[in-house]
Length: 78
Image (cartoon, rainbow, N blue to C red; front, top):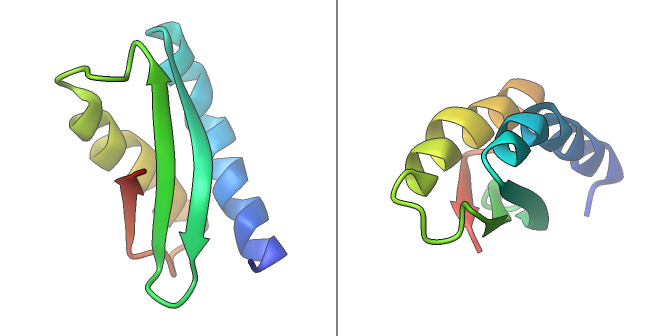
């Protein structure tokens, strides 16, 4: 894994983490596929099984990750 890319992705997750934790959830990085540009994350706590988890993933987490790492094509749940 490209450590510079990994660092930027982790920084983006750190940026959104407080908002997710305010709702009782947790987000963590699972995997980065540099070939496809796909990042896999895990949502735990209140986010697990929440109907709004997909919206949180796309409008919050994915947007933050792409802003710091434009080479990322998608962020998906692990």
